Image 1 (cartoon, rainbow, N blue to C red):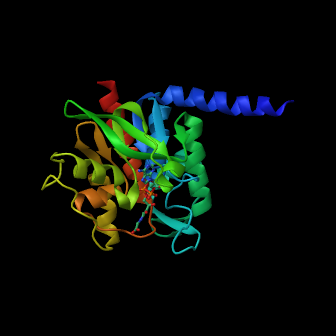
Image 2 (cartoon, helix red, strand yellow):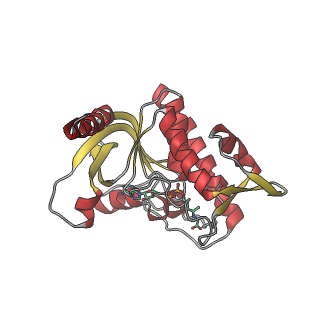
Image 3 (cartoon, rainbow, N blue to C red):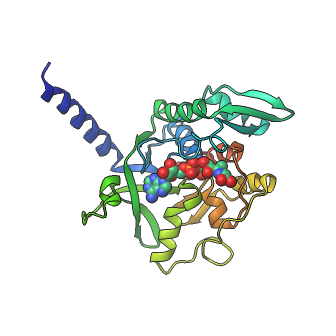
Length: 257
Ligand code: 48H
């Protein structure tokens, strides 16, 4: 065994995965709960999916549970998603389940990966490729480049659909709306901004507002609240899981056409 063989094994495999991701059916930006669920279900249907995460650890806002207490809550309606991803849950009140945040994060990450979604960490999506009135890909850079503000140009990946699953930040829709003279599929053509906490309508709205916000650009999870003016809901995650599931169904139908 030579050290250089270890190095070659890493570089060759990483580059092979990157080459497979140069053209995907779907690129999902953000590996939080909604993005991971969407990616897992899409990959299961044989759709080529790439998930890009700027942090070292995928999992988004799951890991810390509620204020660092390591449980999150889901509703009965989302129990099927937990079961599909083999994530244990504990019923604790009618219609509500407690889920260990560490099991949820790790279960969704591995569930998406083993279904065939290619997940890259330490990759920031800093812009979109927009051609002929349609989003057609992502502009990516390395997290360390972005953190240090180094003047290093980005590279690109193509996709038939790009998903903003970046959570509260709605980073992709925000940048897209700021940089282009475009009208989004929202009441005023712009992101409406997230509202304060009101859990029940917030959970419903996350699923309802999981949609195509511009040709080729979709939103799911918490970014729907920022884009469509929804309430926040705190550490209840059923809406995120169901939003990811709905998105996968929508995109699978779109990819079939
Ligand atoms: C690459 C990026 C970029 C970028 C961001 O926040 P998330 O967990 O997202 P959701 O919507 O799946 O889940 C939301 C949930 O975690 C939450 O915050 C809830 C329920 N809040 C309720 C409340 O009241 O507070 O994950 C988004 C991921 C993160 O891992 C980011 O690092 C990543 O997206 N990300 N990755 N390029 N430009 N921007």
